[in-house]
Image 1 (tube, rainbow, N blue to C red):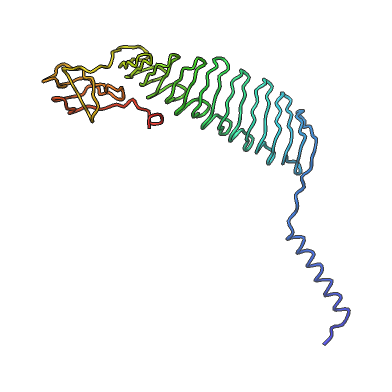
Image 2 (cartoon, helix red, strand yellow):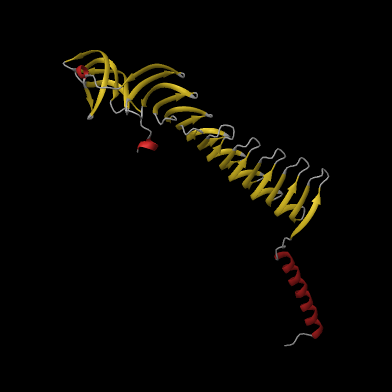
Length: 291
């Protein structure tokens, strides 16, 4: 059977219209990135790639206050790799996310300080290296919200070092401090100063000294040596015992004990005939250095 020619032509025409409509609705619109040079009402100038009215791709944004950003944009904001220079001559080079420095980068400040490391939402966060122009010192360690916080190494211009903890930018907890003469102090800090017990090793003669500090003030300083009439051995290590009494040449009663190798101490311990009965042993070993 054959359909009339006129009917066939009309049917084909209807099918063609339907096909065109379907294709128009299903084929995705291809966005177009173009390079433009625009200046907004405030005088800020942008030269770079745009998608419609949105900064998208690579570009340079010059603000009226002197700040200049050059790098990648996404959804109208710095995003990806870029660099930003401020009117005070400070600048940041590195990664951005949603308009803020975020990721790894280098921040050079107007006072000459330089930070290289991790940044989170515009703040120094994570591991990094900070160099202080005024003092010539360098800190390598962890940061939290722009300040030293966690474990790190502070090296001064004269070669002295502090290796240990920081809390809100201040030295805190157990640390190793090496002075310019390479003498070593292993002990505790609080609020930025020595506080509590520690052991000093004099490099010139190898002498060990036990010290006690109170908010930066030295209250006790004595050489660590064996006391023959008050012998004390714990786990194969000999200790110096300071107490009220000793029996048969052995540590006895209440007192303080310091390992002869300077590795630990016991404060307010209770001993019976050379054996530790009660007391807390505090180590001067830093796991990250002594493991």
